[in-house]
Image (cartoon, rainbow, N blue to C red; front, side):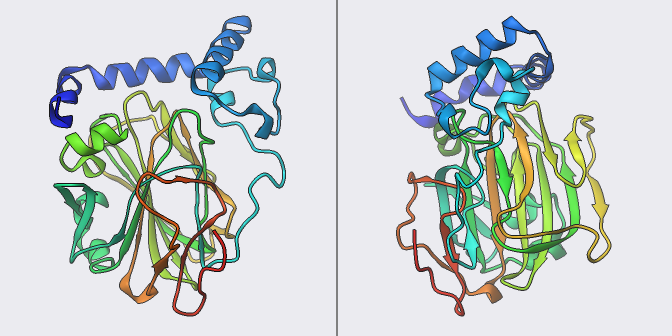
Length: 290
């Protein structure tokens, strides 16, 4: 069966209702019921609790507390690279942006303008630049960290659909990452200039949050919302947490052509990646480790 046919049921599923329901369930503190749910999830998806700052399953008051669990100190050392991987997950796609077109999967592309919510001026900054799309599976650590030092300038909340973002759906739903709900975070950096880090929502992703704002959605509205930040108001160092998914999803990053990026030669679509490993170099700082 083709990927397009496999995803057809998603077009008719009540994705928004399922997402609201999942968010309510995940946030409830249900004592022994929560512990049983977490224990089942750990077994089903093979979650390595040995890496968690608190490995005791019974210590998590809600499923969201478990899902956004912290890692042990030192569990993800940072490579010496201009850009480090911001998440644990799997590489979906990465490489050059062809004019304004980003590769989603074989046969599918979408525009930088669509991804950032329709702001053509912002999108033009990344024409002929580079992108990386990283998928976080249910078993992964679900906090997102900074790939380099950055100063936040804008945050844009873009309403959208709630398709799954797993590899089959990425191959089967055109423009997936520019159709789903997403939070666009715009940073300036001395290392690579202006870059965008996009948190893409999905079916049953209860919400997305950033360290400077807290939970961005809900509330969910049918118009684009935007916040602007004064210079220096939010400054984050490479490796610092910038946000988290309350249930899993995908991160898309855009970089301008002035960054002159060279991706880690070990990277390829489908490869498992870990927070802190070398992602890319600039012309001034080559990748020295994986």
